[in-house]
Length: 151
Image (tube, rainbow, N blue to C red; front, side, top):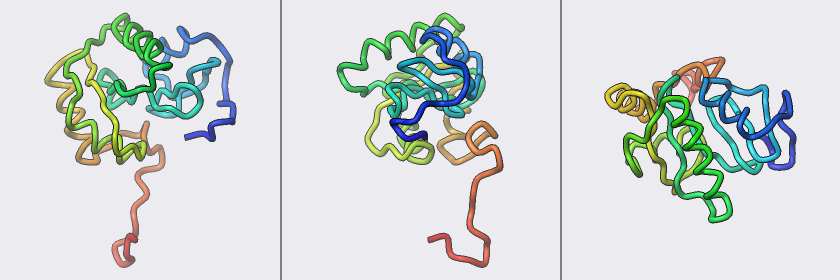
């Protein structure tokens, strides 16, 4: 994630455009005063993860945002709904290991969004098991060599 006081790269635009591009699969290139995209993560207010793409049509949306950011969560959900996604599971339990692995968030609550229930749960199970697509690790996950300790 970018430092909280750094500006993301790309075109400065409005929130609606950032949300539209995130829902369409963009991994960066646009930002607004409140939102930007970092790989598979939609960030708000500089350093707060708001949504996480698991696959092209499967996402997690963070529920436990601070009170002042809850209205923006509603806007994120409306944008995802406009793109054909829907909330499939509230406070989904598989989100915790995903948030820990990708974002380092130990205590967070996420809803599962997607176009298809079976596909979204399969994508979430794969992500929870550490099976990531290139949008998370473009150069492949960084793992220790087999003959060296990973600590």
